[in-house]
Amino acid sequence: MAALASIHSRNPQADPLGRLPDVSPARLPRHIAIIMDGNGRWATAKGLPRQAGHQAGARSVRKVVEECGRLGVEVLTLYSFSMENWRRPRDEVQALMELCLAYLASEEPELVKHQIRFRVVGRREGLPPEVVRAIARVEDATRHGTRATLCLAINYGSRAEIADAARAIAADIAAGTLRPQDVNEAALEQRLSTSGLPDPDLLIRTAGEMRVSNFLLWQISYSELYVTPALWPDFGVDQLHAAIRDYARRNRRYGGIENPRPSGAEHA
Image 1 (cartoon, rainbow, N blue to C red):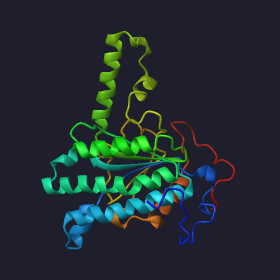
Image 2 (image 1 turned 90 degrees about the vertical axis):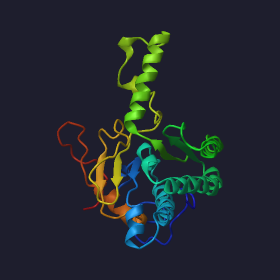
Image 3 (image 1 turned 45 degrees about the vertical axis):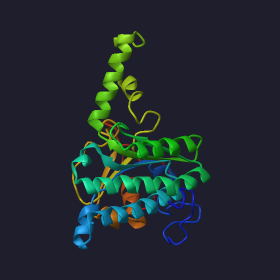
Image 4 (image 1 turned 90 degrees about the horizontal axis):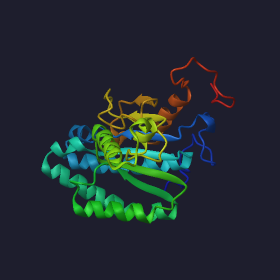
């Protein structure tokens, strides 16, 4: 990760203050979510085992996390392991869990040093106990981080998350702590695992797939979508900049009429 706060001095397209010169700070997404797809295809195309693709994907995570921090993105959410991923071969799942443990161990000191809060969304039940302990350890160590938030979706499925929130509402009504007439969008949002985080402004999907794969279905209601053909191990700073520039050119209407861009929008 080399820390969210670090400067990527080798990137000639960004200025020393951490900005893209052709994107106004007002047009920068506050929260970026990424569906990281294509590790297996990348490895297969190179005649390598799938685990090699996941290891290469971890290197892309480091680059993207670092650059988001340098640019001033407040929240980065990465779809790391879906509930459906348990259907993959056992050795591949085991390799992914080991990669997760190695990542948490190596990045914890950097997160603490640079005041980056770490959190995981998804069901802890079913994860290996050592992974659950590592997640809890890093979340606790970074709980006072205020500079930015790195969120990993692990053993995550959005339909399950919404169902869990609905059950929590039902339990609160049964306990008498919530009135049925007070059930609204805010009540459900407060019971989602992403509670307290802003909704994603930009959702990026790699590997050219045109679907959202049960990821943050509630939270991406008004997110801008960006799909790139790049496989995740090939996704780096240049591809991230392209996605942000594309986002900055859009006009987010939220169901209303088109509004003029705010002053200070990016140069044409």
